[in-house]
Length: 273
Ligand SMILES: Nc1ncnc2c1ncn2[C@@H]1O[C@H](COP(=O)(O)OP(=O)(O)O)[C@@H](O)[C@H]1O
Ligand SMILES: [Mg+2]
Image (cartoon, rainbow, N blue to C red; front, side):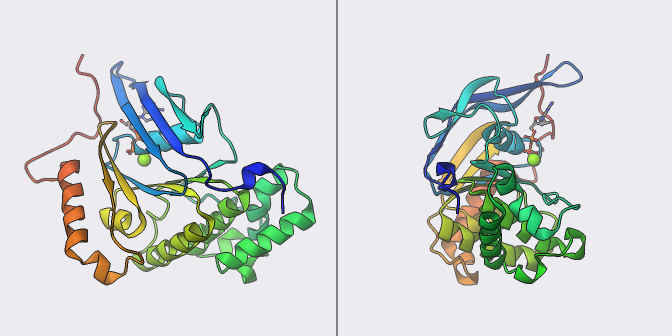
């Protein structure tokens, strides 16, 4: 095991303090991808970021990952401003985040290797993480020999191994079939309960948000329009998900996102002049 203190997971709050992110569209108009967004997420919380396409969800994660500068305002991990990428904050994308030219085990060990960890120490961690995601027998396989769901498990094992305390997941299971997604939901919750990392999980699927999250942040036009505690008991089995509380939450979320037949929200918001 590494002695690097950053390996301690999920021990610092995540804060957005008056964050703006404005892009110039090729037409010359300004796109307000984040507009004065402020929040604090306590360490270890599972947050779903929900919103329609083009409303700023990915921008929020990219700012947290240190991949996107803000126009104004600051993101913090604890009291440290986010100024660039760090192993403490890992992205998991919808597209495969595994390297196709590396065996499964090498994928899992990749960030440890770049941190300079010895082969024996890396092996110990990758053995454990591969076991955690149920892929022990596939350590020496190529990613192409695995199903889409299994490749997601590799990605989860790799983020676990990196020791990242903040997981930034951008519609990570969007391309998977329903049953594979459900089993990955269960796995993710299990990993989260054991490791206590802070998770930002972007989805436009309200059911997925309510299965997973402690809290749902609704993003619309780059603004945080609603911040909802999900008080549903865990595990969120079929009964919990069909309960009046869950149905009410789901309705509230739909209303805030403006998904009504009489309302059309344009995909791209630009300044008028
Ligand atoms: N690098 C960029 N340059 C110009 N516009 C961008 C850039 N990144 C995002 N945008 C715009 O910002 C808005 C929000 O994008 P994004 O955060 O990707 O939305 P979401 O993830 O919710 O679909 C969109 O209008 C998008 O076109
Ligand atoms: Mg996106």
